[in-house]
Every structure is written in C-alpha cells, then in structure tokens.
Amino acid sequence: MTKIDRAMLRKWPVVIAVLALPGCISLGGTPPDSLLTLSSEVRAPAGAGVAAGPDRPVIAILSIDTPAKLDVLRVPVAVSDTELAYLQDAFWVEKPARLFRSLLGETLRARGGALVLANDETIALPTLSLRGSLIDMGYDARASAVVVRFDAIRIDEAGTTSTRRFEARETGVPADARAVGAAINRAANSVAGDVADWVVGEG
Image (cartoon, rainbow, N blue to C red):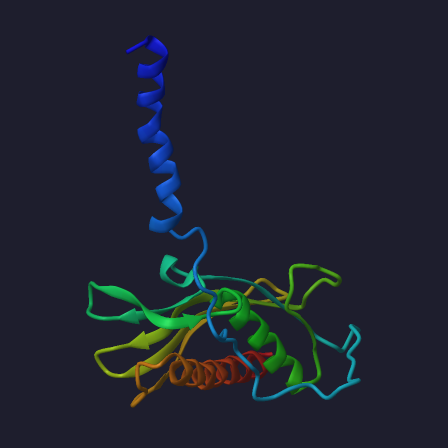
C-alpha cells in the first residue's frame, strides 16, 4: 500500500464521522407552539398623555435584577429546597425582568397623575425612582402553586430610600404551561398593583 493510500484511509473515518453528525445532533430545537407573556389587567386609555411639570411627578422604573434561574426564557420549577427544573413547553417571549418591568410601568401609568418612564432612555429627571429584584416568578411543584416575589426599592427626589417585599401566590395550578402562564400573569398583576399602591401612597 502506498503512502497516498494510507493517507486516504486515515481520512475516511473523519469523513464518515462528519457525514453521520446530521443524524445524531440537532442544530436548532423545535420552536414552541406558543410563547408566554405578561399582560396588564389595567391600562392607560388610548390617547392619554402626561407631560412633566413642576406639579407632575416623574417616575422612572429602572432595570430589575433577577437571580440566574430567572435570567432565561424558561419558567423555573421548585422541585425541592435544593433542586430546580424548568416547566416543559413553557417559554417566555422575553426574559422575566423585562416583562415585569413593562407590567409595572403600565400599571403605574394607568393610575394617572405621573409621567412614567419604563425604559432605558432618560428624557426627564425623575422625581422618584423604582428598582428592585424579581426573586421568584415561577412554579412550586410541591404546592402546585405559582409564586411571584419582588423586593422593591423606592428612592425619592431627596434621596430617601425605602424598601418593601411584595408577594402573590396562587395555589391549585396544574403543571401545564398554559395554566401556569395564566396564573403567573394574575399573580404578577397583583404584585404590580400592590407596588403601585405603595409608590403612589408614599408619594
């Protein structure tokens, strides 16, 4: 056997392995049938506008922090105190922090009386800033419940800082993507409403 023949034989296993790859791995997963989102139960009326002014507060909702389990497009499932999984077929359209921030903005905007900024563009100096950590927004398999938990931080124009933890829970929810998504939306709206009451009430 010539040196050229030996070299060709040595290359064949590599070629065969490369040809076999498409049948063994998937370069892209099957897209989900639907995506979950958060929808505000209260909305500012169409055409309603608010301008900043001396007697008009400007509320800026800053970026919201999350633990690693929520920094994904999946719905976390607490299996035990030390074990975490993700709910099958449940995918968010955006990461939970952005969805919850938008929900807070719409909830506060619907209360009226303030210019609410819920994006990263600063167009006015806020008289009040709201930020915090979204600790939980998922499913507890042990209790068949959804949990939304938010640690809010409120900073007023004078620099005074106050904090409060808000939580909403809904039990009796089956481990189904659609049912869990709807229950999380209700719980998130409950938390957003409580946060808005606190912010407006403290203002």
